[in-house]
Length: 176
Image 1 (cartoon, one colour):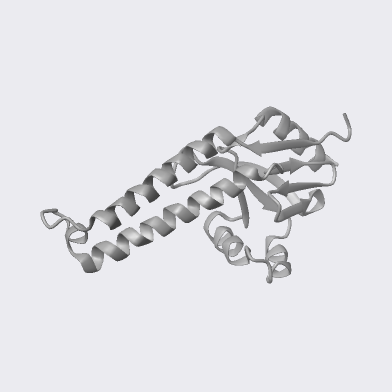
Image 2: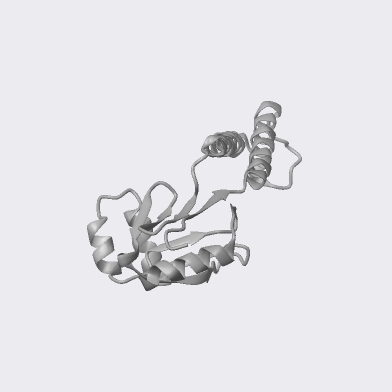
């Protein structure tokens, strides 16, 4: 019981639904590029070729690229969240020792009620940001710190997640 670990994985059913939606949008944009602008459209962007073709081509690239990235994520079998006696690991890029964390708070994103997760309250957020200056996520962490008061926020709404086990283990490891 003392050295329990917990791992949460991405909900692959949700991910497949997202991939199907992205592919449908990419194909729709591709079909629009092939069929051309509609002169009778009420929207100027859909009837003027100088707006229509770049916009629809960008849609193909954006939605198609996002679908490819999501397909790569489906193949990744590693956990998205790990709680171990030594640390909290969020994805592959963020690992925090328990000695760095003050507490975890429930967090609901202000942009959507369905985006729920946790805000990681660090003991020294300024020191964390200074030490991670070369990290690819540094700008994102700094912005998040300025916006919500903590550099790290993670969402659990897309995970297969047991909240009770997660919170019990986090409380246990934060006490030690």
